Amino acid sequence: MAKKLMVFTDCHIPVMNPVAIEIFKKTVSHIKPDISVSLGDLLDCGQFSQHPPTFGVPETDYEGDLRLANELIDYVQANTSERTILIEGNHEYRLDRWAAQHTEGRGAYNMLAPRIQLMKNRKRCTYIPYGSTDGRYPHYKINSRIIAVHGWSYAVNADRRHLQMSQGRSVLFGHTHRLSLVCHQSIYGGDTIRAVNCGCLCNPVPLYGTGRPVEWTNGFLIGYLGRHSDTLFPVDIKGNFAILPDGFGIVA
Ligand SMILES: [Fe+2]
Image: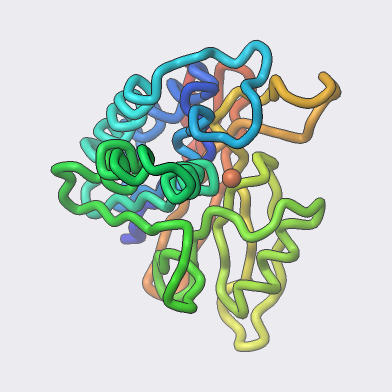
C-alpha cells in the first residue's frame, strides 16, 4: 500500500485565507496522511519586516499569530500517523535577520523564533531551517525520489528552474503562491521527474502592490508514495470547495 502524503504551504498567518485553511483541515482529517509537510511561510512575521506595514493588513500581535500556527500544526499532527515536517520559509527567517540586527532581538530570540516556538513539545516532527551555514542547501528528502524546499526561485518559470536545480529528483516547492507543474522523463527510466507548486493557503488577493490581479491560487497537494514510484496530485481550491483525487468533495 502506498504511503499518503499531504503538502501545504504559504499560509502567511495572519493573512491566511480562512476558507482555504478550513478546506485543507477537512481534507487532512479525510485523508489521514502518513506524512505531512509544511513548505514554509506558515507565519508572515510582518512584525519583523524591514518594510513599512501594508495598508489593510490586520495588525495582530506575534504571540497570537504563533498560537494560530501552533494550533494548525497540532491539528495536522493529530491526523498524521508517521511524521510531520516543517520547512522554514523566508518569512520565518525574517525573525533571524531582525534578531541579528537588534540587541533586544538577540535577547528575545528564544522566546520568538519560529524554529523554537513551533517545535515545543512536538514528537515525530522535524524542522528544516531556511538559512545554511554548513555549505549544504536546506531541503527535506521525502524519499529517494522527491525533495521538498520552501522555494529557490520566484521567476515566471520557477517550476522549470526548480527542476533544473534539484538535479535529477522531483521537487515540491512553495514561495511563488502559484499552482504550477512541470514534468520530464527520467533518462534512467521509471518515474518522470517533476517540480510541483500546489499554490498557497493565504489570502489570494495581496494587499500590497497596485491592486492588479496576480497569479496566486489556493491549493495543497496529496501524494501517494509507492516503493518504486509516486503519484502527486496538486488540488486547487475553487472558492469554498475542492474535489480530491479520490472523487470526494470537500466543502468549507
Ligand atoms: Fe516565501
